[in-house]
Image (cartoon, rainbow, N blue to C red):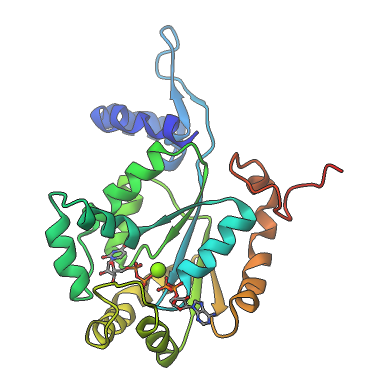
Length: 257
Ligand SMILES: Nc1ncnc2c1ncn2[C@@H]1O[C@H](COP(=O)(O)OP(=O)(O)O)[C@@H](O)[C@H]1O
Ligand SMILES: O=c1ccn([C@@H]2O[C@H](COP(=O)(O)OP(=O)(O)O)[C@@H](O)[C@H]2O)c(=O)[nH]1
Ligand SMILES: [Mg+2]
């Protein structure tokens, strides 16, 4: 669904001037204009509503706060498609792509990869997916990331989760993670915590001010924490039920028996 809509993005950017005119004329935002179909011959200048924008959840929290772990539970229960920005970047390293070496150096040093690189990777995944409900894990890390996503993808999150965890706990978890990650060591972890406070906090505050932020106390067992996550999605029940990838065991799927 999203792929079909987003494939219009090249048409849109190549005719941005006429699009702005159309947007102005119809009072449409970029997000809404992605959800329209360009008119057929004989219907010039008419933008007809076509597809709904995707349901997007951003998952924020410091390193080791449990984002990835809770994302797995959310996917299992609600069938959203999980896109981990960190995993996409690590895949670039593993595949030795053009940006692979640069990404590796930044991750080793706990620094943030240029927004354009990360947003393009996310955009590719969003466009090639048949899903219309996404969990974007570990992104946006900075205000610049947030603005770049808005500009390039042209979508806003419906929900922003923030896993709030004390630093000592995050350090303990990261040092015990055991996934062989180049950044799971005390030196890089200290840098990552500083970068989280300096660059990710403003993003968290931004969504708080927009009324989209859901703060979760990330201390406790995985299941206890998930109990706080579950009700956040209840108001979105109808939208999530329409997902093609929804897990049949999801509490949001009506029992047919
Ligand atoms: N509630 C929890 N209590 C204890 N350990 C946890 C909890 N949630 C996750 N972990 C563990 O902590 C480590 C970091 O979790 P992860 O989900 O990878 O965090 P993040 O994606 O935020 O860095 C992993 O080894 C994970 O198994
Ligand atoms: O949008 C992103 C996501 C991740 N990273 C880099 O990838 C690392 C690991 O991110 P991930 O989300 O996998 O780490 P987690 O918070 O889950 O431990 C970060 O420290 C950054 O160096 C980045 O630059 N931009
Ligand atoms: Mg993670």
